[in-house]
Image (cartoon, rainbow, N blue to C red):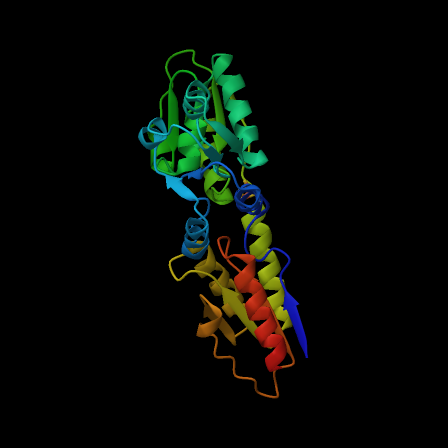
Amino acid sequence: MEIKLAKTAGFCFGVRRAVDTVYDQVSKGGSPIYTYGPIVHNEQVVQDLEARGVQVLKDQKELAELAKGTVIIRAHGVGRAVYEQLEQGGISYVDATCPFVKKIHRIVERESGNGRQILIAGNPSHPEVEGIRGWCQGEVRVLESPEEAEKFIASPGKKLCLVAQTTFNYNKFKELVEIISKKGYDIIVLNTICNATEERQTEAKRIASEVDAMIVIGGKNSSNTQKLFEICKKECENTYYIQKLVDLDLKTASSIRSVGITAGASTPNKIIEEVQKHVRNQL
Ligand code: F3S
């Protein structure tokens, strides 16, 4: 009997790094710890941190009320104004912005500084996009759909630079690039999409095609977990979608010789390990 655990299951590199940073700070003790926004979209993690005294700051208004403590900036990153506010307020902070996001900040800062208008392929209300916007000088446009790209008109003579939110869909990005490119502007296009999601999906597909049963762990509302489930189900009819170990009702028929496990981007390691251990004991 074999268990195949996906290497890419659960947190991506950037989120893991940010979550580890918070636990690290907690273990050091001392001043109150805050995260600027929830560190990850997973209730259990946020609750566990809350129980250890970590509080979540919603916005710059709440940040302004802070007199002491350490603020941790999450993987999505924030705009320049938040850093300035932290520095002016003399609040200590730990920057856990994912390096891939940081790279986008540096690009838009430089290119908008050189006079280019920044276009961001992404979801305008996503915190990562807000953060990227916050490093641009001058006008910024966020494009989410082909229709928006079609309608876009740059000011005469304006040079452009197009980047993408790290989790933007690659095919959609290609489509937007094609539309904008046809308009004949002087434009620099930088594909800043991170491949963590794609790698997770590719590995899940491969494992699901090799095993007799597949377990996908993640929140019911998590769109990336739903997608993983769909991909796995196509390869392996016997695919289970669970949020926690208690949801698992694995039929251990003698025909099951191998089980694969993967998990969505916000599933903590602890849950993945629990499931793995349980399956191992059951088989
Ligand atoms: Fe994760 Fe950083 Fe990519 S947060 S999805 S590794 S950009």
